[in-house]
Structures are given as structure tokens and as C-alpha cells.
Length: 245
Image (cartoon, rainbow, N blue to C red; front, side, top):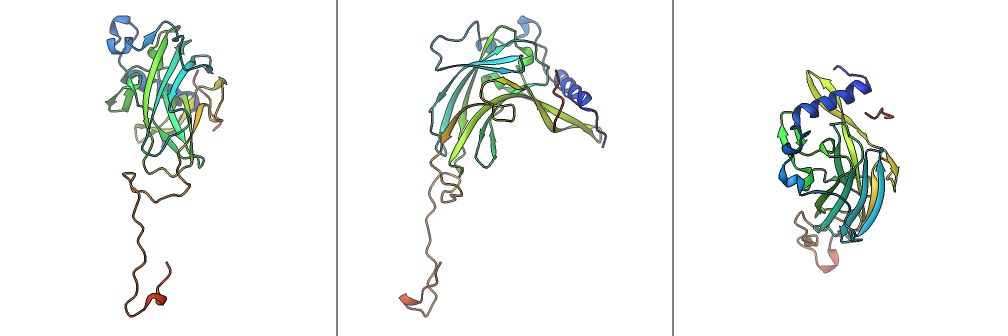
């Protein structure tokens, strides 16, 4: 196994995405569907005005979320993020959205929504319209519908968003993801892992509750069978890493 230095690894990641991503430097090359997601400014009636600075390159300037405080198993959270491009972002970076349980378990929704559509390549899924293709000064609308797992047993979930770049390593001639770099949260409420916390939800589930099947239906409780030959009284009780600039 051959391991490159941190800067070289980040560069390898950038080159991988550069080779796999479609060119987007010219306006005529931008998909019209993505042009619909670009705005000159944040709507005046945005539900939550915000200012989260990700490494001085991207700002989260507003968001809308519904419902606001509850997320029952099997329900859907509607999320709309307003991102402002500030400076050019290295090509390897992509957006991510996480729901995190108190145990630390993460439910990922990184590829959900029109702004995050990806194409399958020999190097895996690659965003069609990554932050590196955005125009500085423009607002981009990032709409998502997050499906809360039906079998979740966490009593609460934290919603966080961020911007990350894969850390790659060459193994038998192939690039493999071994970690990730993230744009640091310079302002806003951080989750301590360079993600911005936007809210917390109560699920109504109890920790360790396995009383529902995968379809969200409550399992029928079965009493232990009564042994033959016994009467009613004889029942058996039941790394610090260098971030690419």
C-alpha cells in the first residue's frame, strides 16, 4: 500500500473529481435545471436568516425546515438551504447533510435533492454541480427531503450540514477513501466536527426500543408457551489533517 502525504492526498482527490466532473466554467455549459436553483439574493421571507461561514469560501445564509422540532420514525423532514458562493472552492468538495443520534450514529443524506444530483462514474458517484462550479456572489437553493428511518430507536436527532472533501489513498493502483477534509465552521453553531447544527428533533422513540418492525408496525408480543402437563400456577416466566486550500 502506498500512502501519500496529506497535501498530495488532497491533490489526488481534487484531480479525481476534476477528471470525473463535467466542465462548468462557461455559462452556456450549465444545465438549465441548475440555473433555476440560482438566485441573486436570499428571499426576504426566508424562515430562518443565518450566517454560517465555511472556511471563508461558502456561507449558509438562510434555511427553512419543517417540521421544526419533531421527527417521528418513518416521517419526512423538508429542508431548504440557501448557500452563497464567496470564493472558488477546490473541485473535490461537496455538500453533506447528517442526522446524528446521541450515540453518535450518523444518518447521511448527502446526495438528496436537485442541487446534489450525482452521476455514476468509475470513481464512484460524482456531483453534477459541485460548489466548485458555483459563481461567487450567487445564492444557490438546496432543497432536500430527509426520510427518517422507520427502525430508529434514538430519542432525538441533531441536524447538521457541512462541506467536505474525501481524503484518498492509493491501494493496489486504485484510489480509496480513507478519511475526509472539511471546510471549518468559522461562525455559527458547530457540532465540533466542522458541521453546522441547524436544529434538534424529538423522535418519540425510546432508546433501545425494538418493538416495531422495519415497516414501522408494532410487533405483537407473544407470551411464552405453557409447558405441557402444568396448570395455571406452573407457567414459565418469561487526524489532525491538513485541509486543502
